[in-house]
Amino acid sequence: MVPVYKYIASKVASPCTLHICGNTMAYLPYLPDSNIDLISVDAQVDLGFAKSILGKKVALGGSIPTISALLFGTPKQVTDAAIHSIKSGVDVLMPACGIPPRTSLENVRAMVDVAKCMVYQ
Ligand SMILES: [Zn+2]
Image (cartoon, rainbow, N blue to C red):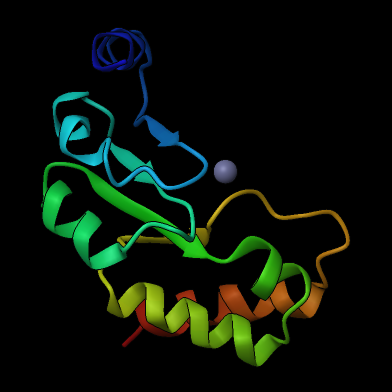
């Protein structure tokens, strides 16, 4: 897929984000050559490993567990997951996948509050 990602990135006049669901740890070594600007990883991916592979060439996004934290967790669980993601090296705090329908506003706010707090420290 790297040639396809390179082609897409060459045609997009803005930073490119790629999200791949599931455990992508086997694919990560190929992605720094893809010209993608940010890789969004799922909750199964070890963030420290991902950061060590991607380095500074590709930003790492993720990875608050979508179902267990955002949909069914408490704001405290979302906060803990967000802090864990940042401390593990993510450059952009985001859900591990999409935001599920019926996710509580309090849980989304918990994620945003951590991002604001970490940015302004
Ligand atoms: Zn996904």
